[in-house]
Amino acid sequence: MEVKAGMNRNEESRFAGLEGESISRDDLSETCVDRGLERGAGRLSADLIDFIPDAILAIDIQGKVIAWNRAMEKLTGAKAKDMMGKGDYEYALPFYGVRRPILADLVLMPADQVDGKYDSLERDGEVLTVETFIPAFGPSGSYIWAKASPLYDSGGEIIGAIESTRDITEKKKIENKVCNMKRLLAEVIDFLPDATFSIDMDGKVITWNRAMEKMTGAKAEEMIGKGDYEYALPFYGVRRPILADLVLLPEDELKWKYDFLKWEGKTLTVEIFIPAFGPSGSYLWAKASPLYDSAGRLMGAIESIRDITER
View 1 (tube, rainbow, N blue to C red):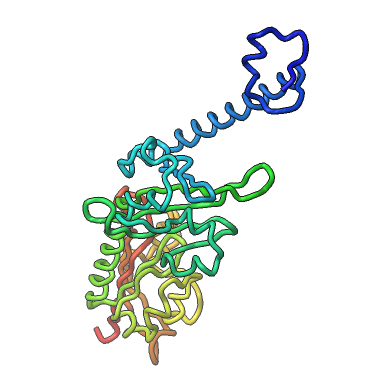
View 2 (cartoon, rainbow, N blue to C red):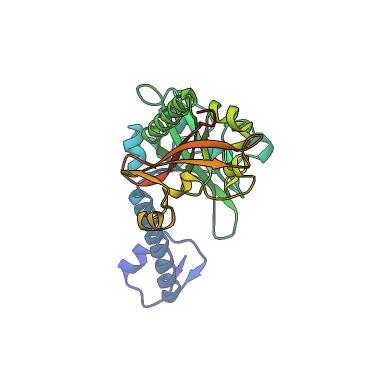
């Protein structure tokens, strides 16, 4: 390497490692700036990844770890200094206890090789997302949400993959508890002797018990999720609000429009003759009440109906 005149010995020594046939002071300055920017950008990227609350890992095209943030250390117990540069699926060991491809590996594989690796795999372009239960992770297994995407260099070439991982075990426990409670509620409603159904705030049917099936002839599987007052059709032959809809109206509007209703707190009761229901009309007793969630937010209404024609 030839160093141009005017450089002192310290400058010659500092840049003695740079390759090239000939280099000027300006060339050296530009090279230093470029390398400084690269180092700065790399440090910034590492700091950003470390700052992200989700556990993040990245691998290069050879499957070696190039990023392992603090959240990943906390999630797995494996330190970044022990994982950086490791390959041969070592990053799978904290999760599965064995070396195997994980989501970051799948985004680097052809699509036909990815299918079947996870039951709940979703694809959005090149991005893969999954929710899965891992029996070997945690004291009694854990539910994990993960999202992975390829990494590209400035020339558009794939250089690796990045994966974000989140432990959603507590969230899944809550969801399962809610599902169990809904199932229990449905079974309780199904057990009631009076025809009973409930709607959500959008007016869609969320429960429809066996007594309601027997009274109306409409099956639960046909009614669940139906809205637009479809639940009124078996009674009136037309779509119109019924008692369950009325309890969702403001109280002053109800008292002004429906003076035949009986009030007991927020519960409404009525006895009414419906000409279109039954061979020659029917007298029905109905009772409806709002439904609230655990935070006291209104979430729908429930109504019980009894045929009192004989009485």
